[in-house]
Each structure stands twice: as structure tokens, then as C-alpha cells.
Length: 297
Image (cartoon, rainbow, N blue to C red; front, side):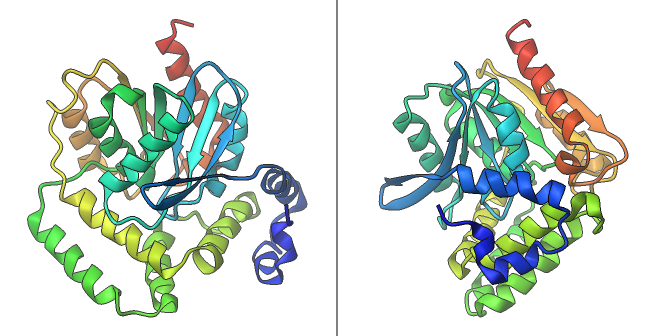
């Protein structure tokens, strides 16, 4: 497997990352290859790590390649089998979730603990409704429910139409403008996730990927969730939010409590949207305690 830092353009994006951060990540990228699977004509890539008796399906954020989650993948793989897919350029959440279900079935997995952070939380909320029998439990992190906002959906649909005619560079700029508001301020402690973000945004993703991210967001907003959706689903739910995350203000927390009254809620302090990096140990500990509780440990 070729070292990703052999590409000078990519290496330049990682030049400010301290070696103690970069080298473990470099080893992960060089030692762990994606599996490949074609389902209904769509090419999928995904990590398959660990070998536990239970499986975690880990759904990454909007940029759709789970490099951000590498440290959690390795940690969770010590106790569970971990499936972490890339998102192919499909335009609806149903298509995306059908592919995820296809991966699980291809791998002989009957049920998985579904973990979704940020945009991955959008995917997870659709997945549990579309495939409740495949979902053992649900972990939602720093994400949002859908809202009955037809006017907002129409605006997103219009935006998608005119964005289709933009060149890739303009789409990268627009995506950076939107997602950049959620990224932490640059410090040595978060140099690695910021470099990963830059690599995905500037090098890895194509125009088709950018358009599919927006198309699936439009599709997500067209769904209407209710507290009764999961009334017959026996699984448990963990919702993780933080006080300083612009995506989960007080109004969103209230909406989540209404939508998932049965959920266990954990509110982090002193961090923003990037809690999984800024408080990685606590982040994992909260999830592990939740899953251990399901097993009565």
C-alpha cells in the first residue's frame, strides 16, 4: 500500500502536524486498507476492524471518509467488530442506508450498534427507521433531528440546482465555508484533524461527492420524524451534545428530548462540535459505558 504522504500535495497539508500525532495516523492509514464491495452498481469502500462478538457500525461526518475517526476505530476495535464505511455519491438517504444494510448482510452481521456523529447522525436516524431489525442500539453525537420546514427544504432544493453548474473549486469553497464554522480553532492539539479535513476537502472528494452530500441533506430535511416512529423498536438510545456546539443549541436539545424521550443524554462541557477530538477519552468512555450497560456489565 502506497504511503499517502508520498503525494507532495497531501504531504504539504500535514506539514504542521506534530510528529507524535502524525506518525500513529500514518501507520493506521498505511496498515489498514478499505474493503471493496459493489451493491446495485454502487462501489462501496469500508473499514472492517476488530473481531468482537458484537459489531459497531460507525457513520462518519459529512465529508464521508472515516479518516477523522481513526483513533476511535482502533480503540473500539479492541472490544467490538467495527464497520466504518465511506459514503459513495448517491443522492438519497434511503440509497445510502440500503447500501449500509447490504454491507452488514454481506459481512454476515445480523445486528449492529449504530453510531453516528454530526452528518453521520442524520444517516443513523434514517437507518434505524429503515432497518430497525439491524439496529441493536443507537448513538447520536453532535447532530440534529429533521424539522417540518417546507420553505427551508425548497431553498435547499434551489441551492442544489444552481450548485450543479459550479466548477469543483467553487463547490470546495462553498463546502469549506459551511463546514469551517464547525471546525476548532487551529492549535497544535488539533492540527491532525484540521489536516485531515483539508485533505478530504481539497484532494479526496470529487464534484459528484460534494453534490451528493447536499442532495442527501435536502433529502434528509424532507423526512418527518415523530416520537412514535420507534415505539415498537426495543433498542436503547444515547444522545451526546455539548453546550458550545452551534449545531445543538438549547432549542435542538429540547427537540431531541421530545423526539426521543426514552434516550439517555450526555452533555459535554468546555468543547464545541469537535468533542470527539478535543475530549476523545471522555467521548469514548461515555459510549462504552452506555454499551456496557446494555449488556449488564
